[in-house]
Image (cartoon, rainbow, N blue to C red; front, side):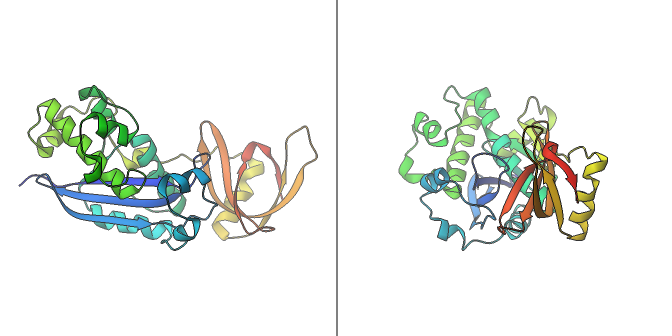
Length: 272
């Protein structure tokens, strides 16, 4: 029997800034056939971008009926088990899952993660980031693949792109590809979700109270602003501390509005 694998797609509620899960889908593929599927909406703790709603066709109200991110990740962990995980775009999908897992304190599978986009760049002349365009270029019937704006439809598109990669690479099946990658991983095609987790920011002594408040669930007041304005005093409940593109950030509940907001650590002058 061929080794089963799990193909995962996920959509973020935000197109800029820190990502938040909005939809998650997965396929378990055995001997070239889908044996099981997972699809769930995720209720994000932040406003959903208009562009995301337009692309998916979902309403904000529909997303608010979804499970919380921690539950969605638990479902994925149980569904994937110890299988290898394939995603179309490791940077986008893998990064989103790893970021959300770090925020939730969840442990994602450490099994190999295969980037289908990287395989397509090696083996397909039609390789591109847009799934619908790529499957159309491969001559696949779009009506049979599902909605590329939704996570489950994107997973099916990605699976068909993977099959095209196998054919062009001369691999007889997914098991042969997995064996080949295990022997010669090469490039960015093979990694793991744990490798994509965001790092923690550097914490100067003036910022250490944020860690203590986060761990204790306490409220603090940020003296916040840059050198060109009068600093504001912001009452927050610290949550997730992370680094992105060389800068440190804090996600925290704004006690005035009740909204989850992101603060740039270099603008925090003092923690009271």
